[in-house]
Length: 113
Image (cartoon, rainbow, N blue to C red; front, side, top):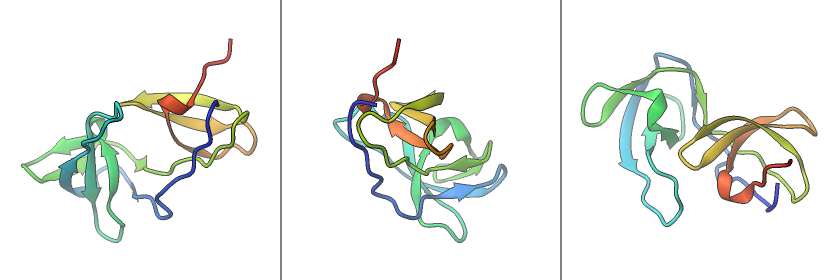
């Protein structure tokens, strides 16, 4: 880890495989975070979902291909994480300090030799 990261989403979207999704806008920004869509589903606050977990069933409708959580880790410089899955400029990680799982932006990480 090379930079502080704090989540801006206190209630991240989380859903099971097969959940129906309302697909909104595609993320547009300066970061290299391609193919993230603002999705919503019953009982959840909208959140960013990578296209790889969405089965499109129309322009703005889809179904989850797998279970998913948009939870981001809060990390301080110097903390060590294990990378588990890389998608669209982010890495799904496990904190080696407390085994918490969550996303971190690749731009804030450094690989240890």
